[in-house]
Image 1 (spheres, rainbow, N blue to C red):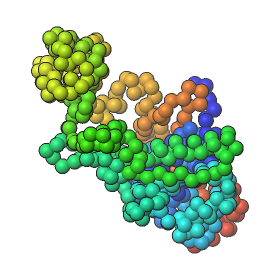
Image 2 (image 1 turned 180 degrees about the vertical axis):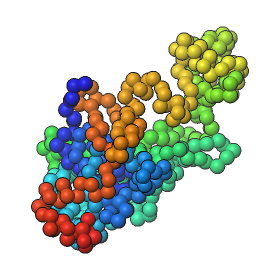
Image 3 (image 1 turned 45 degrees about the vertical axis):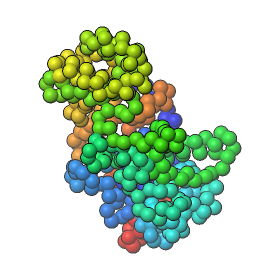
Image 4 (image 1 turned 30 degrees about the vertical axis):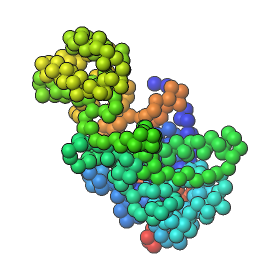
Length: 399
């Protein structure tokens, strides 16, 4: 396969974040060629190193979250550590951090301090509530952002307590906005003759921004969306239906022509021609009876049979994938979404492929998550620290 240029070649990123939101943003940039230096505490490093399932005392998640990054251990609370950050920043394009607002300022490496050193610096600041406002000093995690942003209220069944999605979605959304913001700021700086700037990303706002028509619907009609279980509120039919083998199928027949094809495919010709179901508004009013028609059909067939009939009718449908399904799926494999890489101990590990897919400048996985402090000597030497000075920093707990 021909090697292609990466779009972020020569872009230098300094990551001061931990866990998910900040590091996920820099992971995206690293996948597309940016040089990312990840700063970790000398004692234990990023807590993510020890989350969930471990392999030789290191989280398997870590190998994905920190791929293509360089690890530099640094005590940011020390004067010497802060001076090293200031040296690094002179040659950095993007700094990503997700400390509580005011923390970097307390250490003398906040935005006002660093932009004096490098006026072209772009600083992505991810936090629970943002850099301003009455809640800014409160600790905020992804689950709190999902709750305040309105997502948690809508997730689950109406007769039960709200539930969470199975991943830290709030963190991931904030990370995506952080990466997008950084790229927009780079474009403004380099193409439009602009200067550096900081990007304020709040977890709750990142969630709130994807809540579709939630706000204007309430504003104009006092409509409060509630939990609707497996169905999609205000759009019909779009639900989960049981099959004869106990498995479930997702069917999205909510377009007018799609609904018509769906009804004909399940031998409900009368419903296909029923004027009450001619548009989405009408179908929503009768969603329960439509769902009953569909499940009366799916329950008579296995999942595979249902998928075969609906695929033939060009109706959007699918099974609910477990990770076991994903790993063996030919479409995942064909599109390079299951990548196998060798770890340093010789074992192979499967990791997710890169998204999005650029035709001329695709992303690449050069390395898995680094060992703690693996790149200390390389980075410090470039900053002018000789071996003796590096040893002193290590003995004093700075690196």
